[in-house]
Amino acid sequence: WTIIDDSYNANYVGFNNALDEIKKYGCYKVIITPGVIEQINDSSLELSLANKINSTCDLIILIDNPPISKYIDDKLSFNSFKDAYTYLKENYIDKELVLLIENDVPDIYLR
Image (cartoon, rainbow, N blue to C red; front, side, top):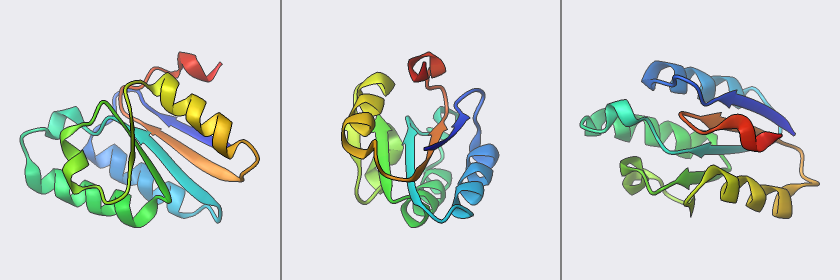
């Protein structure tokens, strides 16, 4: 796996840039995110970001059912990053993938 940990201090612009980066990978693309909390009152930004997530990622995992979830087509939802990461390890351990961890997800569980 290639893991891109963009969990610290994420914002709308950085999130979009990270999605542009994982587009460059020729393998399965996974994102784990609770969405961008700062954009919670801007549905146009949420929709734009959701559309980009939908068109970029093969597997979308949302933490704690964020507001952006209403715009995400196919997704899995977990209560914590630890649960989401455990699911990935149990089901995708042998798959070549790039994992984008986006916005306020503790990276301590990767150890």
